[in-house]
Length: 104
Image 1 (cartoon, helix red, strand yellow):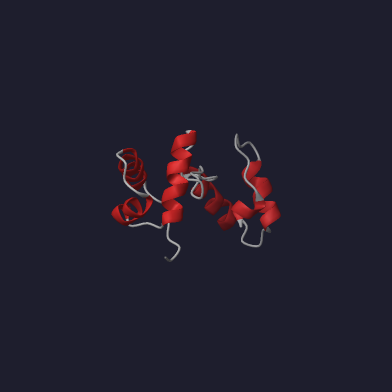
Image 2 (cartoon, rainbow, N blue to C red):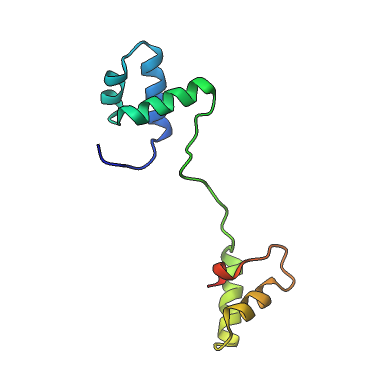
């Protein structure tokens, strides 16, 4: 099978439920429409108590809408400013500092 995105919580629940009822590995993989390896991994993680989406982490945005507008004002004020200079301006008086990569 081709590599796809992570399984949803619904698919994980189906895998766990189907296997708990006594379904075989092949039947469960076919029922959920995923690979046997992915199905086994989810079921094993459930048995160990560690079911979660590992590849997709949820992270906070470094700059919210207000910070974005502030950055735009800084850029408009000095169009020739370097990324370092903009980062310094953005981090002055800010509670949450941002990196040069974020500013870039």
